[in-house]
Length: 228
Image 1 (cartoon, helix red, strand yellow):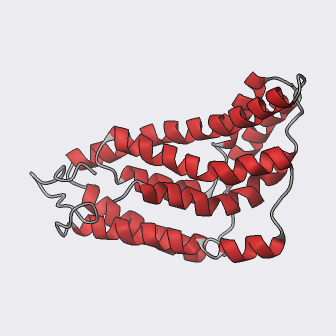
Image 2 (cartoon, rainbow, N blue to C red):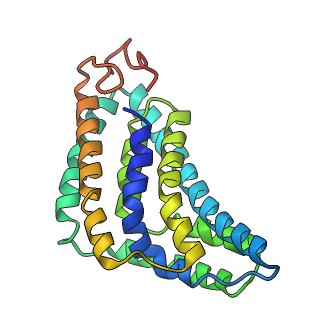
């Protein structure tokens, strides 16, 4: 499974991220010290968010390695692919769970405290907290990270997903403007395509068809044949 897909998923998904997190970024406090400090603060905010995604990649990688050693990773890969497809189809029909609501409230309280401060440290912390907000696309990326064959690869997967969101999110943070609704509507149509491609690749990977990079042999003795 090409790591580039993680970047593409982040790039396409950043349209969703901009809609969900855009108001928060537009509310970020200004920075004393001129344009240089302003740019540094906005960049640190985004890097903090990507750092959180990378840390989540560590967790995903450890889970994936445990399942790989138990011989369950291929079945998990198929299950995750099917779950992504089903979850995407039902995402607009299922209410947000109570634990997710509580998590958001806790994070909003912590973020509110940081918003009252003006400093590079507070902006970096805000970005890291932003990365913990419940997000369906992050969960999709984590599913892909769990299916990786190494801890380093899982972390890289999540980092590339985060980097894919960087152009749109940084542009929004710097300009303070959202894309026109018509443009967002058209571009957002590409998000389901990326999600379905990832789900399909996860299922193919779990089938262990012996196709290099796409569906490598994950059975005993062949799990690391492609190093993917």
